[in-house]
Image (cartoon, rainbow, N blue to C red; front, side, top):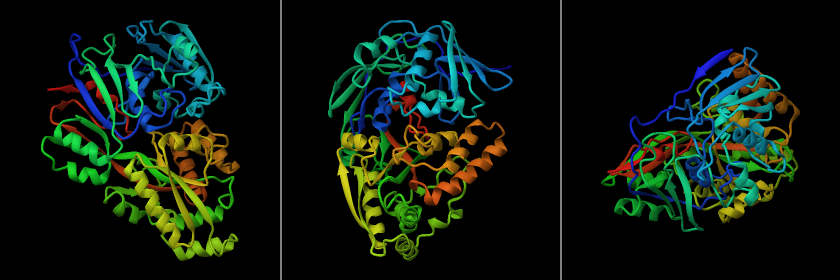
Length: 495
């Protein structure tokens, strides 16, 4: 039995009265608030303040304790026992306990929930609340990424779900802030949780998410002091804010990537030769320069930030930009004159919308007739989740373990496999990758997976961009995380 005490970072001292409203400018409203159902960044920007998992990821991409204060792992790697904090209450005043963890996991795994998180936990054979402070997870087999997935196990109260049916319009968690008011497409307001278990946090009384679709308007508001913080700044806007007085620009290599996703149930994307041709037609360096102004790198299936796992993109033959070779492959697949299709995307993120336009031009140079459909964000999410697209351009989040990038995305029937992709060899590798404990063997598996997916998978990976955020000088205590998570909003004070 291996025992681990968890680092729980907290301010030392007595709790204090929070003061001030932190005004954030964001590009879109949350696409729902249910932590077990949503996938949009705009939703997690709010959810991460309202809900906690047993563990969380810090700015150094290390795991820390949240609702759990320690854990043990059995010698065979099948039993994880978590000891929970005893000073936590939900926003409705009820004490948090082990039964809430078990319920939350069962809800994620329930097919009726349709949770995109389900694939992260399907190795759990049983979850048991031994007592109010002890929860035991028994796995069907060793599961290497189990701990790195625990931040995605947001804990919710059963009674609120049963009262409302789901949590898309309500939010009751244990986090530093509680939902207070939502005015659709205008603002969302969170109030400090007076019973939050970390002494001295949160540091402000109110978070107000102001929905400001135009990047230039967000930047102007930051410069004038209307807004205190923009959590996600596009590269073009970052150029202007970098020299703005009383503004601090933060940057970190991001784990999220832009992509062209292809629906392999629709012709001609069912043909791997066509998918390879798409990759050959793309010029990732042009995207680095034209969309990200140099603040990005070509994207393979894993971020180069995962130095123990990522294969250099130079090793993928389809990354050599070659429109002529793309035309030859298309002709071989039966499309000597190309074909027509539509790329679905959305306009609330400038880097995504610009990427779609550049991709359109690149593919047209290879003889394809491409239409870009810039949908309202809610419509995009619905069509994406229903696989209602030929292809799409979007942004996918990253993870500190390669399983988090790949399994639920590429496994047959995976909870975010909207491409309807299925390959028995890839499936077998994905299962081995998450059930193999030996690091060297896992590295070999994920090297093979990257080679299999880079050119003929359902995703043409485009770029990993630098993640920028910006805040006023009066904002103290905010740190940026490569995952894009906003956990450090709870540490912010206003001077």
